[in-house]
Length: 166
Image (cartoon, rainbow, N blue to C red; front, side, top):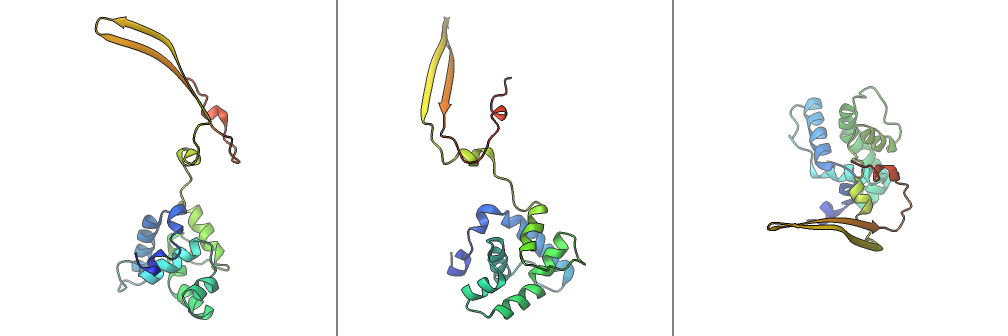
């Protein structure tokens, strides 16, 4: 991975970049049929910068460019593609932060799964209890209850989501 490909790589943690790249490339083809079929590396780089919460001026600074050149570039490329993807062609971008909001509303920022909420936690206590055992012919049947206790998180999880009985 090159240094530029690594810039703003954290966008991949919170955004569905591949799906977003495809949608923006399609919008690009619709706007400019003679353009390249895919987003350029520079377009992807600027997009990741915006998705990471960096302003055009901050992105320009990291790329050793002037803020004005970044703004002109974004207005001539990504902003147009995003407006097409979110179906707001007559809308004014107004603020670069609107781009992230509109793309999130369009579903390009997936919600974290329940598994990801618990991925950093190990049980503080585990209890395995054998509650029944039977032997019939050549089989052994066991009934086991398992209880795992996790440290509480700052996020509120509804216990009824986990306490549902079959």
